[in-house]
Every structure is written in structure tokens, then in C-alpha cells.
Length: 260
Image 1 (cartoon, rainbow, N blue to C red):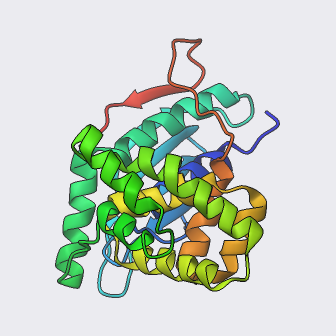
Image 2: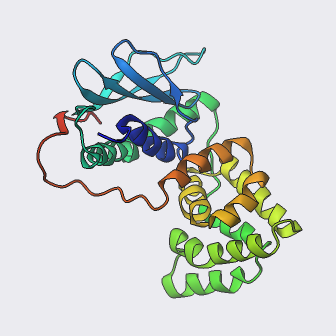
């Protein structure tokens, strides 16, 4: 095996969970083997490779007031020999683990914990973000009205990819040090801090990941530390093809049903 399966899975989970408000993954001491933890202030996931059982585990727990994890609950377990395992097997594990953390029940649990821990909820949605963008790109107003007339709603991902991204790309390439570019950076930072889960995902996976490296390098210094960390992980997945799970020889095999 000429790749680091643990790092590959950790990067994919980090990119996904960052959009849900989780911090950058941190090494976790575990007697069973190599582990990493992804945490908010209230809940955490961990990725563990159990050396003895030759398997990857995805687990979850709640954190106490000191930020320390409680008892870990297994969510999914896959057999994987790190000496002979193939990339296709690791990608199957990624697909499954991402399916777990993206599941409506899991997301709802995380969000409920965050609400009860902070006593507040994020209520800034993608439409609010698009309306704010009109102040930077006035030409979006006509496109936004047309979107509503034709489709009866705003298709957020499609609209941002098709209309916002080209304008942002052009602005950052031609006028990277301009006031509008600074306003764009400040808006992205503000929207990430106050946006709901859908908006955070759109900011990272659609807008920031959609920029060329040149344009991203221009906007990156204008972003806050948290958003810079999130973007660093999400942009690692640009151009990577995480294949859908398919039938193949059972080298990396799921050995335990997921718990919702």
C-alpha cells in the first residue's frame, strides 16, 4: 500500500465536518491505535484505526464542561489491513463514514447539542447571503429575480455556482486589492460565523472550492482563522473522485451495522 489510508479518511471527514461547525481534527490518544477527534464545544466524532482488529471505527460522544470526551459510541466499523488495503477500499470507507455524519438524524443530534450548549441557533440562510451579495455585485439582482420567476424558488447551489462564482473569480483576478474584494472577504467571514449548516457548506464546497488557486490566494488573507482552516481541508478534495461504493473483492469489509 503506497498511501496513508488514515490520512485520506481523516481529510475527507475533516472537510465534511468543518461545514457542520466542527474544529480541525486533533490527534487523540487511544491504546487501540491511531486516532483523531473532530469536536465542537459540545459533541465529538473520532476516527480510530484498531491495530489489533485491523479495522477503522467511526465513533461519537458528548464532551463535558472541560471539553473532555465521554464514552465513545461506535457508529460504523470496517475491516481494513493497512499493509495490503487498496485505495478503493479506503474510498468505500470514506463513502460510508460520510453517509453516517451527513445523515439527518446525526446532523439533528449535533445541531441540537450545539443549540442546548450555546442557547442560540444559527439562522442566516443561503438566500440572506445572496441578497447581501447584491450589494457587491449589483448585476445579481436581475439574475436573482429571473431565478425566482422561472423556478419559483432560488436553487442556491446552482445559482451561486452559475452566477456568483464567475463574478467573484473575475473580481479577485482583476482587482484583488480593491474595496469590493475586501467586502467580499468580510462578507464570507461574517456569513460563515453566523450561517446555518447549508450556508456554511455552500461557502466552502461551492464558492471557495470553486475558485481557481489564483483567486483563492487573493481571498484567503481576507478570511478569518476558522474559515481559513475549513477551506484548507475542503480544498484538499478538489478534483478527487470519491467513487460510489461498488461490489468488489471483500478486502475492506464492513463488519458491524451502523447505529443511527
